[in-house]
Image 1 (cartoon, protein in one colour):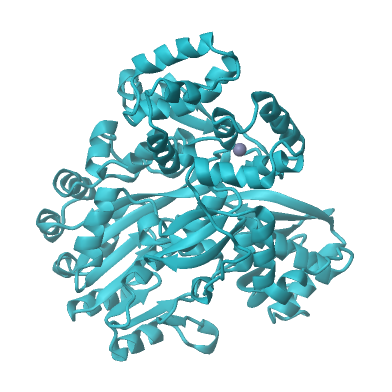
Image 2 (image 1 turned 90 degrees about the vertical axis):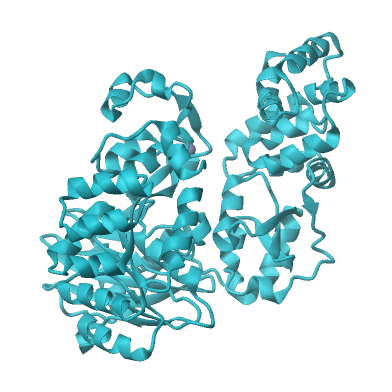
Length: 621
Ligand SMILES: [Zn+2]
């Protein structure tokens, strides 16, 4: 009985939250239910009492499906007994890779048809019959089959501007967010049996999928291939291969943090380095100087570009491979994680401005390149010409002229920028402002009516302005060309598989400058660690932003060469600026990330305002 109540409470509180049910009615139904036969569920009871309407419940569940567990729904709607669910959950514990639905079907607790029925009829997901449905070629453009495979979905067709995507498990947050990376919010969730999805994907991937190489880790080729292939599969951004006295250590950078992958004997070091040098056309004979190179790597039919650096240490060459065009690097602007009200203002006043300089700033690994690409692809259209100078091009966009800087053949930044303005561009993307020259080019291009998007290396938005002033750019040039400065960081996301609630410590609260009661009504979460998150408690990352859109008061302050303290104060008071710290705190109180992440990544420049004030400025979340 107790067990049942805790599992149902999520659905009940959702109904209450959505205003479909009152606390009183829920309590009454609970008392009624306790007098009924044991197999009556709470939903049944509520339906009997006519407290809720089946269709309403269906709609609410569909709209909120991501916050509910499939097992609870199946038992609540009477498809599966509580005992069978417990057994299935126990089996799943020993077979970690399997989804609950898979376990339920394999153990014949429900037939696959009944399972799909339950999801499609009862919960209202559109059933997609893949045995008859033709898959439209147009939806498959630029869609990596491997990505769909690892997330168990297949895009089917476009209807009303949205892509219908068939999922094996529409309750899997991972799979849904996998689809979001490709389609943003622009898709309809459908459901189809797992084996049908696999069959269709196999056909689509045709030859390339089956050719998955058998990796032989006894050869240098095998070792290098498996190191790179595994890194791509785990979503790593960099691979570190480091020689020590007796071992060769391989680690991956995943979500910004290095994670151990494998240890090889030091004997493997020379051949691994030789193999990588062959692949990236570096000098094999040279072992005493630092070197660099580039290569492309084919993984299950998808091409990946890698940039390689060989760095000579006392124990041999440390090799770092950066994986450049990862699938998850382009995110739709609407999905980068900027607060709604701020995103709207940014689109209207900055992105929508006909000319001017837009700067995205932050340290290495803060996600600014991703944001830059999101902005560029948001404004890209057949009516305008976009030309870039990047060092290097990290992701190839459609219908944009991108140039990779190559100092080795004297295609320098300076040389490229000199030519770029003669290319009749509407938008100029300067990968990074790194000296007075590039800063001057940016400002003067904006003065002559161009839109310039660029990145910078400063801590926060105000420091971006100060840095420009310190680069000997006249204040009047800055105030008349710069339209916005976005500072950003990437914080690790709490793992949804092992999240639990907790109370922040008194020390944390005090450090933030809040009183304990200021935070009382918010729920804080953290991950306890599980196999899904490599026992780190985190999975994936979320951007936090400080979006400064210059207004007359800030421009005036720049002209008067005010201090950074003054500029920051004016920006906060007059432009509705939400600081990095504040945006981070809003995301902590939403249970997306943790206070530790904030303390680890975000500078504390000013006392954050009360949470409700931050949420008001952000326009809710
Ligand atoms: Zn976890």
